Amino acid sequence: MKKVTIFSILVTLVFLISSFTEKEKTTNNSLIFTNEISTALTEAEATSIQQNIQIPFVGNEFNGFKEAVAFKESQGRYHIVNTLGYLGKYQFGRATLERFRIYNTSHFLKTPELQEDAFIALCSLNKWILRKDIKRSVGKKINGVVITESGILAAAHLAGAGNVKKYLRSYGANSFEDAYGASVYYYMKKFAGYNTSIIEANRKPVV
Picture 1 (cartoon, one colour):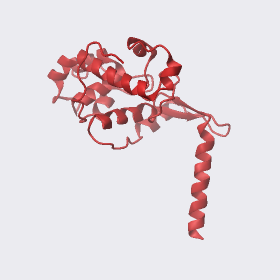
Picture 2 (cartoon, rainbow, N blue to C red):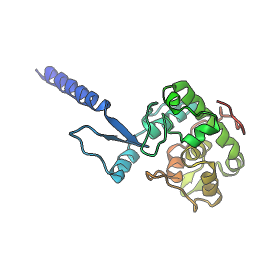
Picture 3 (tube, rainbow, N blue to C red):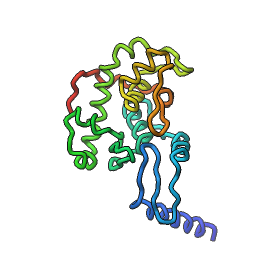
């Protein structure tokens, strides 16, 4: 009897989750469900929930790094477009995609391989832009966080390489937060310690 009850509960949960899937939307790092019986979260509530989501551990190598970033950005889903228009698994802006000559956003959302290549290309570009700052800053402690190359690359994905330069060169005084409250400091801390040596600094990476 007990086993039947547990099974019934699991079946019910699966049904409820699947009933939401067709009507879900996302706000950068925070999901908002628009089912008729649900209540939309406020931006502050959504941000709070996202900050507390635990990124699954998938190893400290580059694959672990990119999957951790993807989980933070979109829960690892390729088809997502957030309320600010950022796209895909890694939440790219259109201007960044155009830098890599990607203009068809519909095709981009439907092509996982293209999204993966674009992420690697952006890491390569950011590593080139920040190469001097990486050399100067890795191993130092800023705002209580030991600076690592992976933390720098993750923060650059969030805020852009220019804002990461300002953060590092001001020793954390000049910071940045996106529209949902994610900061350079938070990304430096959250994504520290991954091995990103496989990424080669490249001024003009091609996707």
